[in-house]
Image 1: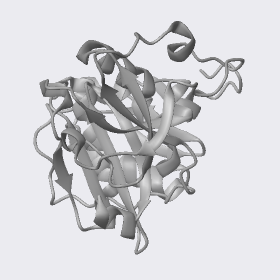
Image 2: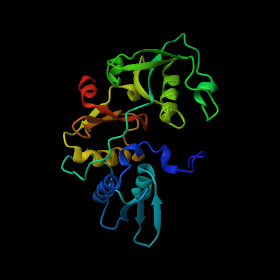
Image 3: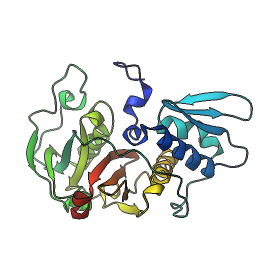
Image 4: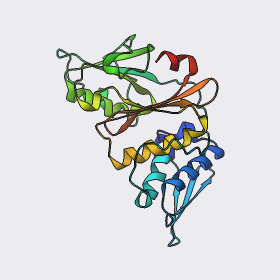
Length: 259
């Protein structure tokens, strides 16, 4: 639960896409299709979902992460994305206000201090270690496109992984996202496998599928990137890396074509 607002869903990576009841209904349908006949009933409701087990037990879920955790015992093992499913559209989030961060290995860089990695409500914004530059779209194949990003210098691959995981976790995840990686020659930092769709009615299915894959841990070291249209002007951009969602946003269709 968010200590500041008491809202557990506030930190869920998929929340911006699921702000409307029709989007949550589409997710409920997608989850039901992944589960077996004896699975709980999943119903969309204001603020989330209600999971009703065959035993009568009910669980209120306010975010996609909670929902998949609640039904995971009944879900089939994740396989490739089923392009034959199309459960519905999601909400197009507001324009992105977070800062993109390119994590770059520079052996002479100092280890990140606790003040950089332990940001709380009273701590400063991303500090002087971030230098504003243009991110290289081809950096390790992990860039989010030729778009402005701050560069975070780290001394080695281990420090890069720690920085990436911090960027994917609160409170950093509400302020920044991973725009790319440079100088890391390990599997988790490889160019992501892209899972794409041309159908905006499949976006709810994509979000449910990638969270199922993430929680199952079957691709913890194999990066994935989801891309699909949200509407005529916006496209989904979600990246899973090192077992964490490191970027989840809407891009303009023009920016997405350049990425």
